Image (cartoon, rainbow, N blue to C red; front, side):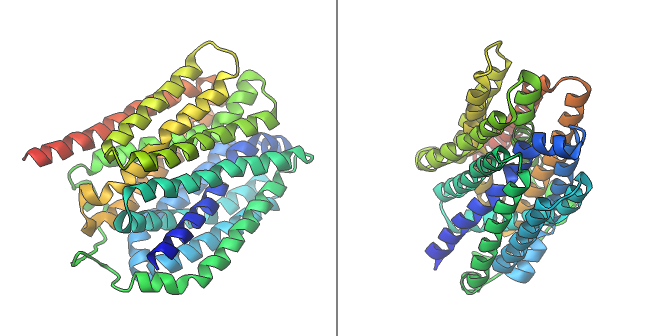
Length: 391
């Protein structure tokens, strides 16, 4: 049963990754057709992120009441409906409206599935799970690039992904009995009741603030790269839109391959070491963007940044029950996911405003700031952990 659920979760994360990279790769085409300002992509992204923050904060209560199966089913159904809405959108305001269910559908399912895997499976499965998300995220821009080639038909890209999500909804509906059996002793881990905590109580937990800073900054780096890589190439260096959309998929290819490899590496290295390796690789990618080299440096740098991001997020997620304890891991997971999406909500749209007012070529410097802050947060978690062991 647990093997069947793991396979289903893998499939779910492929499908969940598909829409995450669509807006950034499609935005140059959407912006031209709908005559929107460049920064409007940030507003749409912000709406999605706000919905995700809300559902992440509610995830512990929703999962305790309805179970992972039902929360996953309803969340993916909301996502499918939103993507189909994007496909028929006549204006950017319609896109904003559809962004609401897209965001609400993401938070609870993300927190629930990640905590389920962190509690029931080994670290390599967390890396491979997010590798499968990367497969979806890599395929999304490729699907969009194909449809953009067909008379700039970005709507066809959204329709294709929306239909794939609808198929997943049907699969999840059939699988509900599996989830019910797996969660029969719902609400308990190792004999202790799993609790939902208020934000105030979460912030009082040792290491919580440092961990939340790490999640905030990681998501800021990943989402800003995802959303603005195509515009960075097109507006900053004159790359054509189809090529730029293809290049943006290389970021997710780096994440996908990196997470496949980090699943094996996790058998030798612990989570804090994996986080450090990833941060070093991401810094190399950002440094490459800063060098005065031809435009080939952009796709290479995107691969490096993606490869660096690969082990960081799964390792931070998987160490949550070890760092904070299984009893409060679901509550902590929900707040971590919410904080990550606050990073998405604030940081990526702000760069859109900076790019419009100043220069889109500021992107690598912007990423460098949040990489530095992420390292500060994760190193504090690491130092607290060592101090706790010494005590």
